[in-house]
Structures are given as C-alpha cells and as structure tokens.
Image 1 (tube, rainbow, N blue to C red):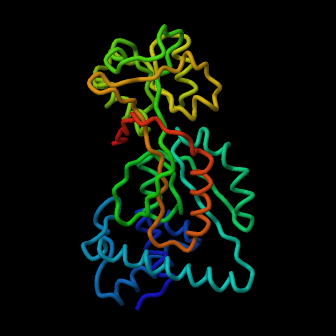
Image 2 (tube, one colour):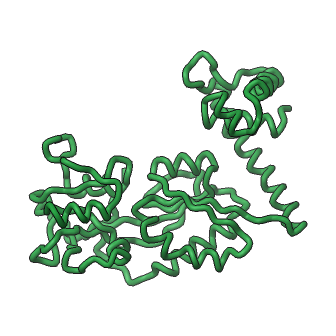
Image 3 (tube, rainbow, N blue to C red):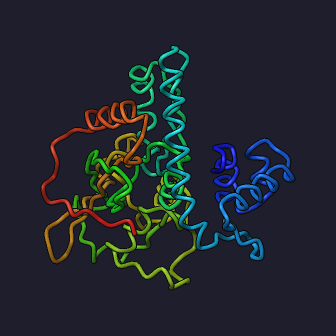
Length: 308
C-alpha cells in the first residue's frame, strides 16, 4: 500500500498538474516527487497520470483514485487533530472563502465576533468568486464557503444564513420603485464576469450582454459602479446589506418588482462545508453568529435569483 506522504504528493500534482509546482508545494525536489509517484504507481499496478498530455491529465484509474485518497488524508488529519487536542497543542485553523459582494460587508460585520467566539482558532479569510470558491472547497483548500445559493451538491453540507433583497441604485430617481422592464430602458453598469450578482442582474433584467455597443465599462467592485452611475447615469444593482454599510441614500436605492408578478428580486446567502469535517463545531459557531447578526423580518414577496 502506498504511503500517506505519497498520497500528499499525488494530490499536489493533481491540483497543480505540473511537476515543478507540485514539488515546490510539497517542499521537495522534482526528482524526489517523480520518483515517489513512480513507486506509488508501480505498487498500485496502474498509472494515475497521463504524462503524454499537456497539462497532465488523470487516467481512468486516477479519476477513481483521487477522491479515495482525499478522504484518507482527511481522516489522517482527524487523528492528528485528536492527538494534538489531547496534548493541548492544537490551534485550529479555519479557512473561509467568501464571494466579493458578500465579503464587502460581512467581514467587517463579523470579524470581531469571530475572534471573540473562536479563541483557540486561527481564522483565515479569502475572497473568491463563486466558481473558484466551489473548486477550493472541493480541493479542501477552504473549510467553509459563504456565497449566494442555491447549491445542489450532495457532498456538501448546505446551511441557509439569510435572504437579501437586491435593489437598483439609480441617482435622483423620482419613484421609490421601478419595474424590471423599466430598468431595460436604462444603461446597466455590470460587475465583471465571474461575479454571481452580474449573472443574477443579467437574468432578471433580461440584459443582452452580447451587444458590444451597449457596454463601455464592466467593473470589479460595486463602489466603483456606483460612482459610474453618479457621474454617467444608468443603474447598477445593490444588495441591501451593502446599501447599509456604504451609507447610501435610501432615495437612490430603488426597490425592483417583476412585471408579471409582484415579487422583489433577492438572493439567499448560504454556507457550505464538507459533509465530514473535524472543524464542524467551529464552523457551526461561525454560521450561527451570522444567522443571529442578520436575522430580521423578511419581505415575503422575495424572488430568489439563481446565480448560474
């Protein structure tokens, strides 16, 4: 049977698909990693990687093999966790991934609370776009993801946190509400591709993004898009919690309603984590603290938008 060290080398090579980067990640020389991979494959009787492709690809055996050794290395980390905890030497590291349009307010809202609740833990927060976050949690690079749902994945534990209405930011608009069809007459300022709020905006407002003459800028953050609206007119979308933290004028944050049904667009903020995690007690504290902080009376007419 191959060793745990060899499993870690194989997982690093699977993640990077590059011998040099994998060896650097494992703090060994490239010949050492190559030799250990060859030895593991000889012991198993099957090749894990197809070396004829660039980048490396998994063989049929490799595709079946990688999920198995991920689970094994995860179980080994549980043993390490147990022994260090019993000796009083364990400092738990919680790695959290949050999408940008949520981290913009949630990190400042919750960071102090998390430090107080998780005294013996180290919390590391990464800002990741939705697709990158899902890849990171699959590779076990993060322990907890906070993003806009829904996510239908049986290998993940999904916990709703709160629902958040999405409004239109329009400078000096005469009414407190606007229909989705009326938004179509205004210039939309979009987040760049990969942000789920952009996709939700495109779907709900039926924006035709393939028409290049409609666009002169796509921004990386909402604050910049707000300035573009202030200076050039048009609109962008604002999650209600971001409206709060940016101290925007309520008269500029306009409630949107659908033309056919009297519903307001919204997104559901969820937490995702692996079904099996040694860090669940701490993860649960983080989730519960968010639920408590953002618990409020909800608008019953919300239409949850899909981020895909």
